[in-house]
Length: 316
Length: 211
Image 1 (cartoon, rainbow over the protein chains, first blue to last red):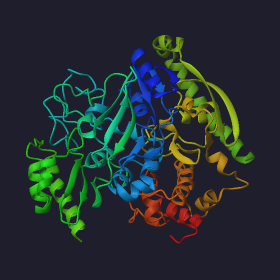
Image 2 (image 1 turned 60 degrees about the vertical axis):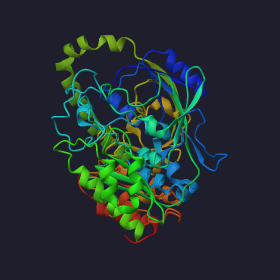
Image 3 (image 1 turned 135 degrees about the horizontal axis):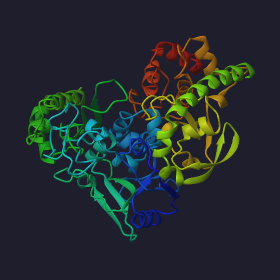
Image 4 (image 1 turned 45 degrees about the vertical axis):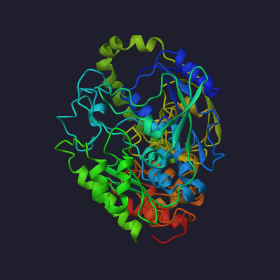
C-alpha cells in the first residue's frame, strides 16, 4: 500500500472542500472495496478523508411518503429496516444477496454505489486495462470475458458494474443526493448516476471532483410484489452472472432491472410495457442492442430465463 | 492460559528465527529499495478498546485493524488468511457487529469496542461457542477457527436483532434461527479443511436448536 495522510471530516461540506483542496484525496467510509484495491495499488490515494463521523446514518421518512437513506447507513441496517422490508422488499433482497455478513456490516449506502468492477483484468496490474490505466487497452475483450458485460460496453471496456443494491435502487427510481466543494447540493436520478464506458471507462459516475454522496432517496412505495433473483456460480457470497430486480403488480405489469450484464444497472423502461406478455418479449427489447462476447453470450438466455422464473413466481 | 502461552512463544520463536535468517540474506536489496518510503511514514494516534482494555497507539496510517491487533497488541488469535476480505479468518466483533479486520484501517476505530477471540473466553473459561466447537470438532487445522467463532457469535446476535438474510422466506416476519440460515450467514467464513457440518452443529447447539 502507498503511504497516505488521513483526516476525519466534521461536516459533509467540509469533507467536499477538503477533497477538492487536497491532491490525490479520496473519501473513505466502510473501506471494504477501497482498501482491497489500495493493497493491490490499483487505488493509491495520497490522502484519505474519513467521512464516518458525518452523522449521515439515519433513515428518515420524506414529506412525500418515501425514505431518505443517509449515505453512511450500513448495508445490514438498511436491509433490516422494517419500512424497507415492508415497502421496498426488492432492496432488502438485493442487499442480502450480496457480499458476506462481515462486509455488509461495514459497507455503506453511498460507498456501495461507487463499488468498482470485479473484472479480472482490472484487478491484474500486469494486464492492459483502460479503466485502471487509461490508454493501455482492454485485455478483457479478447480475453476471459465470461463474467463481463453483454450490453452497454465499448471498444475500450466491457467491465460490469458488480453490485446488487444499485440494481434495486434503479428499479425503485431512487435519487442520489450530493454536496459539492462549494456547498451546493443536487439530486441525481439513479438512472443518470452511473456512466457507460464509451472511450473514458475510468470515469464511472457523473460525480464531479470532490462531490460527496450524502443520501439516497426512495420515492413513495409503488406496491406490487418485489423480487431479486441472483444467479451466480456459488449459492452464496459470489458476484452475479445475471440478476433480476423486479416489481410485479397483480395485473402482470411492473418494472425490471438487470444486474451483472452491463457497466451499470440495466433497465430499459420501454421494455416494461411488455411485462404482461412475458419474459421473452421483455428481454428481447431490453437486450436489443446487446453485443455479447463468445464467453458471455449465455447471459442473454439466462436473463430471459431468470425473469421468466420471477414472473412464474409472481403468478403463483 | 499459561500452557498455551508457552506453546505460542516457542512456536513463534522458531517462526521468527526462520524469518530473520531469510531477512539477512535479502537485506542489501531491501535496504536499497526502501529508504524513500521509510523516510516519511505517515502516522496517526488512535485509542483502541480491545477486549475491555484501552490501548493508545501511534500507527502508520496504512496499518489495518488486523495488523494492529496481531503485530502491535500481540493478540495473534485473530488470523490473517487472504488479507482481502474473502476468507473471514480475520473476523472480529466491533461494537457488536462482526467485520473483516483486514479491510479496515486501525486509525478508523478510535473509541470503538473491539472483541477478539481472546476476549470471548479463555482456556479455563471457554465461551459457550468455543466449548461447542471443541465438543463438535468444528475444525481440523484450526486456522479459520477464531474467525469462525467470532462470526458465529455475532451471527446469533444478528438473528436476535432481526437482521434478515438471503434465505429468509418472509421479510416481514422476525428473523429466526435455522440451519439454512446459519449456512447462508456464515458464507463469509471459509474452512479449507471442510469442517462445515460440525461448525453448523456447534452453532446450533449454542442457539439451543437441533442441527
